[in-house]
Structure formats: C-alpha cells, structure tokens
Image (cartoon, rainbow, N blue to C red; front, side, top):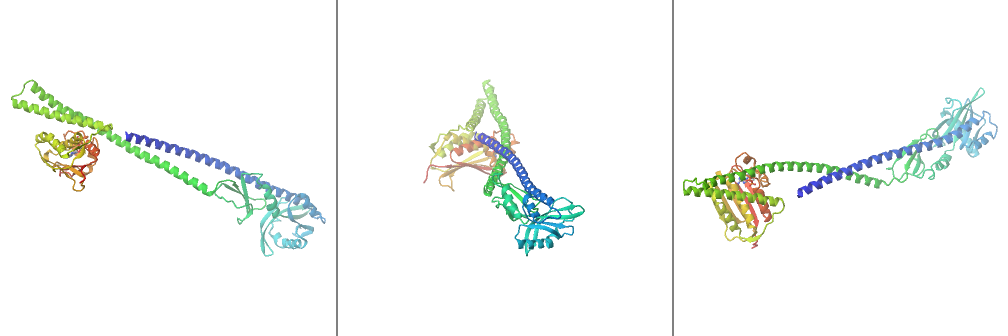
Length: 516
Ligand code: ADP
C-alpha cells in the first residue's frame, strides 16, 4: 500500500518536473524570440538615427560645397555659410595647385586664431586630404585626429572637387563638431523621441563623446558606426529599464537550479521507477512460485491423509498397531496442514496490514517449551535429536503467545526441513550477555548452512535459497518473513549466522519487562 503511494507520488513528481521543463523550454524560446525582435528593432532605430544625422550634415555640406564659386567676392563666403544652414567653423577655396584663392577663406574663429588656423590648414591638413582623387561634384570627407599646437584634436573636413570652365578647384569645409555633440545629438537622442531607449556615442578610443555611461551592461545593446561623417565613432543604443545585473544573475541562477532540479527529479524518478518495476516483476515471479509451492504443500498432506483415511475406513489394516500408526500419520499430516494454513492466513493478514497482536506479560521460557513439545514428534520422525537449554527464572516479557509460538515453530520446522542430515537441533533461551534487558532465543542446526549473500534475502517474503530451489524440499518462502514480522512487532530482532556446510543459527532477541 505504502509502496503504491510512493510510486504514485514518484510518477506525479516526474510528470510535474516534465511539465516544469516544458514550460521552461517554451518560455525560454519565447524569451529568445522576443529578445531577437527587440534587438532588431533597436538596430533599425540606431541605423535610422545615424542615417538621419549623417544626411543632415552631408546635405548641408554638399549644398554649401556646390554653391561656392572659384572666385568668391569679399563677404560672399560668410553669407553662404549663413544661408545653407551647415554648421561649419571654416571654409576654404583652393585652386588646382592647392593654394588658397583670393577671398577663399572664411572662419568663425577670432581674427588671429582664424589666420593661424588657415596657415596650419594649408601647411598640415591639405596634404592629407585626398582632394585630387575625389570625383568631381561628389562630397568627400575626412575625420581624424590632427596635431595642432602640440595637441591632437579631432577635425571633420568635407570637401568637393569642382570644375568651372576649364579650371579645377576645391572647396573644403571644416564641420563644427561641438555643434554635432552639443546640438544635434541631444536633439536626435532626446527622451521624447524614443522613451524606451538610451543612447551614447563613443569615439574611436572608446571615450564617451555624448551620453552617460550605461549602468547595466548586461541588457540588450546594439552598436552602429558612423560612416559618412565622424567615422570611427559609434552610436550605442540600450534598453532603458533592462533590470539590474544582480537581478538578472539571480534569475539565471534560479532558472538553472529549477531546470537542474527538474532534470534531476526526472532522472531519479526514472531510475526509481525502473527499480520499482524490476522489484515488482521479481515479486510477481516469487508470488507465482509461492502459489505453486503452497498448492503443492497443501496437496501432499491432503493426499496422505485421504490415502491413510481410506485404508482405515475400508478396514484394510493388518493389526491394531498398524491402524494406530496410520491414524498417527493422519494426525501428524493434519497438524502440518493446519500449521501451513495458519502461516498462509497470518501472512495474508499481515500483508493486508491487519496483523493485530495481543501482548500479555508471559514467561518466554514456557512459550518456548510449548513450541518444543509441539515439535517433538516431527523431530523424532526426522530421526533428529532436539536439545533444549532454557535459562530458569527469566523475567516475563510482553508477548503474543500464539504468534511467538508460531515464530519458534517455524524456526524448528526449518531446521527439520533443511538440516535433517545434521541430526541435531539445539534450542537455547538465555539472557542476552550483551544487553541486560533482552533475552536471546537461538535455534541451531548442523545442516548445509546458508550462503552469506542470502542471509538478508531469506527473510523477504517468498524468497527461497538458490540451492534449496533445486531440491525436492517443500516450502512457500513465507515462514521467515512471518518470523521477522512477529519479532519486529515484539520490538525484537531476528538474525542468522551461517556458512555453507557449517549449519545455521537463527537468533531472536527480545526485550524483557524486568529492568533489574
Ligand atoms: P520455506 O521454508 O517455506 O522455503 P522460509 O521463509 O521459512 O520459507 O525460509 C526461506 C529460505 O531460507 C528457505 O527456502 C531456505 O532456503 C532457507 N532456510 C531457512 N532455514 C534454513 C535452515 N535452517 N538451514 C538452511 N536454510 C534455511
């Protein structure tokens, strides 16, 4: 009954673990696909932002680069810069020899600084701009760190090769990077434009050019580089409330533990179920063997009884001694039959959990004596001797006398059945030398003994030793299981000491009431 409950609980646990795993699998897949969708969205958003910023700068620069003429009039460049809307610091017009044309420079820098910058630009920047290779009418750009006055600073130059009549000239615009970082970026990345995301722009060395550091690096982040203006810089987009790193790690840990636990339960459950099935199958085999053994055991005494009964009934006896002998056989066999039926019935009762005992303070010695008396005839019939040694004046113990007698009879019956060739049975009842409040009943025989590997198993129901199964010795395999059950019900222990060829000693250790 308890085992059935356990198996049911196990099946339930395995099913629950499987459902939990399936749920995790499902939620993981949907989490991954929603994560993918989110990443895609963020990537599209980042590309759109970069494109918008770059085309804003590129369009304004291209307009300006196209509108400048090879011979600008005084103030003309300044006016142009104002109207095109390009955020520029300075404009240069160079002839085909890369020399500045007259009125070919305008700068928002203060006068002196502007002149200084112009000279630096002609001497140090122009040689590094790929002006001559640029296709005519197409905006080119160069964004890099340049050394000026002993320090490296980033500059962004947009330029265009132009042709006027048969003359080639170049227009170069110095874009205003602070306008980009202080005006354009805040405008494009304002919270109001996309409240779910935060932005930052990093320069080529990874330093922040715009935005705040992302506090939580574990959330989703996408990066898109600038290509047409400030190349080398990247735009990074992150989710705003991605959850803290610690919370995500905790969730991962809990998930892993739960998944690991579920897998563990399934594996354990399967192993346990496998064992239970194996055990059940073995038990079934033993049960069928038991049924055939019991039927055989019932049939044999019955046929002996009916045979000798018929002989008596039909008066086919030679003498009154013979009649007496026949009736004694009938009596012996009916006793045996009765005991077997007792065993089976008691066993069935115990199996159904109904084995109720009635404990009464009893003299253990007397109970053992009675069992010895009951066995006397059978011992004699087996041509064995029974020596008994019962310590006198043992204190009483709480016993169910009938049940305990049955246990002792089973041990003596086994000695008769399995150790007849040893010729001797010795029964002793003494105080336990090792434990003061216990008595030990030992039933010793000099038979073939029991393999130590089977010492535990012979107490299992239906189990019969391997060597015995091959012999024509009748048995059902429930005797010792019954003995163990009875002894445990008396809060005692039963054990066997035996080796092949050395005989066996079965010991029952029982607690006694006396505490002196
Ligand atoms: P049964 O005698 O009906 O087979 P038991 O439960 O009484 O069932 O015994 C279980 C098994 O233990 C026996 O089949 C036998 O193999 C072994 N056994 C029990 N008592 C002895 C003994 N005195 N000597 C040798 N083997 C024994």
